Length: 252
Image 1: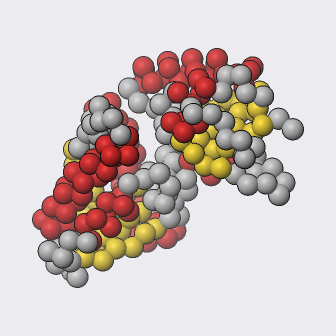
Image 2: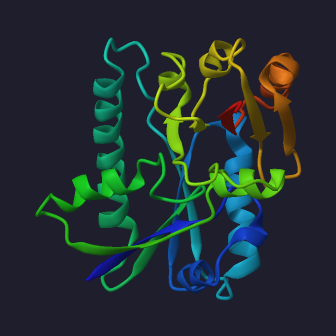
């Protein structure tokens, strides 16, 4: 039986790799990485560094596969994502069929933690439903950007006895949730940040967490939002991509 490992590799700092992940890395014969183009070469490079640092058997292969682009022109965001996942599922199916030997082991190195706003597990579920291909898979958790954000700002995510809502920039742009005072935001293309300029809240923001390019900004939204938006715009123009995460907390 072929085996696939879905390994969470943290938010960018190789020191965030868990001992369980190190063990999993050393079980794999081939590592699969979706390559999102030259502008995001850093994401492939860091994964290569992780393998070079932790994998003892140098006979492993690291295979960077072009990632199918998502069609952003589709009127329904969810329909567009589902179509995108179907395309990626076909790629994953071919990788498992052609690149993993019988009895062998392949691995997907997932940024952060596989359970949080990542498509790998959904795609593997789709592939596993196809009776023409037989494999089993395991999931190894990783340090998420949310955990890294809280650690770098030296804060607890929740207020005493209160919940934390995890959402996306797209949803935040529709309005600050009425039933949550602490909100963690991921996958913000910028609309979420722009929508909160008048909110009476604190913000703890981080970009490129765990990497040499890390930026941290915190304070009252009204005092630091312009600085965050400007830093975000400048660094994205410079590097061609940005990954950022932030916690919003309404003022008491």
